[in-house]
Image (cartoon, rainbow, N blue to C red; front, side, top):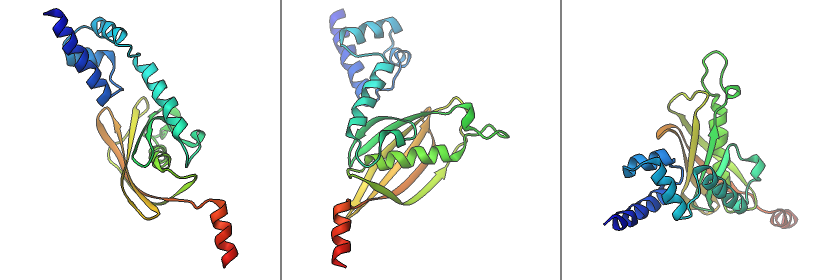
Length: 196
């Protein structure tokens, strides 16, 4: 009987981490109604690394796929990337990122996080932001860990329409709709100029 419960718990644990790889051992233990030690033993037996290692592995895999933007230009840490489909990044708000008077995070950090993630999602050698429509929803303060998720909503000829939503502890704090335009490569531009 115990081994059947264990198999079911392992299946649930695996599915939960597939849906949200950022769950901590504490969150998993609470959701599965077991101790943190049980979760750690389950992870070991299933060869599932701890949160920090899972995040690092995801980030390494995502950075290999980057095309339209260099990894050093990403604001935040790129965690997951599926070109022409979606991406995830994280950013920890530090005290030097907030306004002195109010302690609220400077908006350009969230904009840059969202914009660079939208650019990263595009499967092109280079891309530019054509339009950005943004909404700041809730103030963010030092210590917050922001998670941005980008999703390509549709593609029209040479444009990508991309939604980016940024959350802080499951609360949406920022959202944006970007129109990203791939840049023609240098050879295409030269051929076009030579014809003119």
